[in-house]
Amino acid sequence: MPKITISPVTRIEGHARITIHLNDAGEVAQSYFHVEQFRGFEKFCEGRLFYEMPQITPRTCGICPVSHHLASAKACDRIVGVRPTLTAHKLRELMHMGQLIQSHAMHFFELSGPDLLLGFDADPRIRNIAGLVQTHPDLAIKAVRARAFGQEIIRRLGGRKVHPIFAIPGGVNKPLEPADRDWLLGQIGEHIATAQMGLAIWKDWLEKNSAMVAEFAVFPSAYMGLVRDDGALELYEGTVRLIDADGNILDEFNPCDYLDYVGEHVEPYTYLKYPFYKKLGYPAGVYRVGPLGRLNVASHISTPLAQDEMKVWKSLNGGKPVEGSLFYHYARLIEFIYALERAQELLEDRDILRTDIASDGGTITGEGIGCLEAPRGTLFHHYWTDEHGIIRKVNLIVATGHNGWAMNHAVNLVAKRYVDGTKLTEGMLNRVEAAIRAYDPCLSCSTHAMGQMPLRIELYSARGELLETLEREA
Image 1 (cartoon, rainbow, N blue to C red):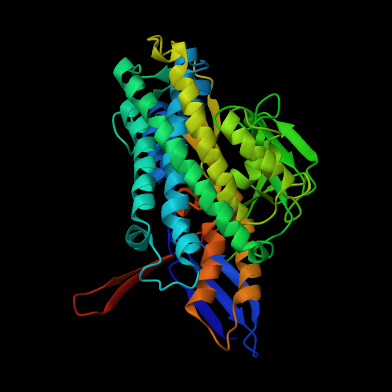
Image 2 (cartoon, one colour):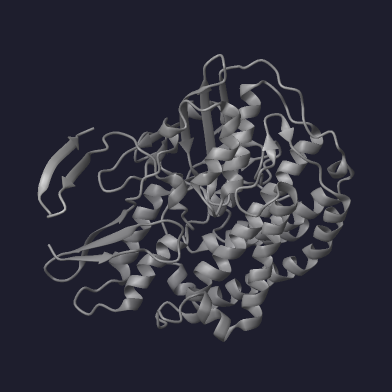
């Protein structure tokens, strides 16, 4: 059977390829999204002391290290049976808003923006951030500044923009300085304006391309995300809500009980696991997470500008969940505004400058679970320790992993709709890649092992002679 391979998938974090299998008539028969890189954090963290995990696990990724840092710290809080002080909680959430701001800004303007502003069929030599700088220089500068602002929140709290040192079991390691608070507050208005500019770009593009958006990887699924007690969007702390394709609540549960609700399925063509809702099984119980999932499960948003857009969102599909994959971009921009507004609320909170930033540790409990909403979706860190606090087992369900099935399905739908093997164009293949970009995957974070991991090592002499072969089948 003829096959088209897209390798690598571009403008995403991590490494992947797509294979498009054609029938004899040149039509797409089936497509697959292959994630072939492997990160072994769940295994090589065994034997470490639990309090090292907030510094080890962020190395999973340079794009969203804060998400792992904070989820890990939340798990460690539970291992020692403590709750962070009110100020420490708010400082952690502020750092998390910095993560959302920098990630969402980068994705919309720099990774997906070239498709929207320059066109899916634009010359690939300019269909990138460099092309945007040439064609939309003012916008490109504002986008870079917005991302830099999110990183600056992280730096001023955690000492550096990537892999910060800030959260510790029971709190954080330093207070926020008044001068830093004042500087950050003074910048927010500029970046809210940039986010609103992004919304205007999206809405203009949507109006001009509404027919394509209505058929581009549109499919029903369940959705998952954190919500507050009143159903509002929540990104740092909350209850996990699962809804079905019609918007009905399937379940709500404490994140610490996730193993009772979430299972993981393995497919032979990818290292990316496919989580599912256990009560429905696989594949009936697959769901989507991230901005699309979160806005679908939440009833409203607590900040005014984001809530204005949320009202529009809730009207898009007659009150039912929004299904189109390209609407991830719209949801991401709404969250971008929310993160900026929420950061402003936290910075204006009089508790944010207090110096009671850590609680004393308690007795080691032997188990801890941390959960939050990373930019790409719901993130779980789960650690088991011995009585001395040495890690015995780790389980990570990383945000992008939840969307594994959905990304593969989106690739297949778009390839069948747009790819013609008899007159192939680069723009056709870029549309297939765009189906992945909509989900903003972070594959470095999310590829872990389950099942068999075959290994073959061959030893050659300097003359190229095969001296020895070692094989492991599992």
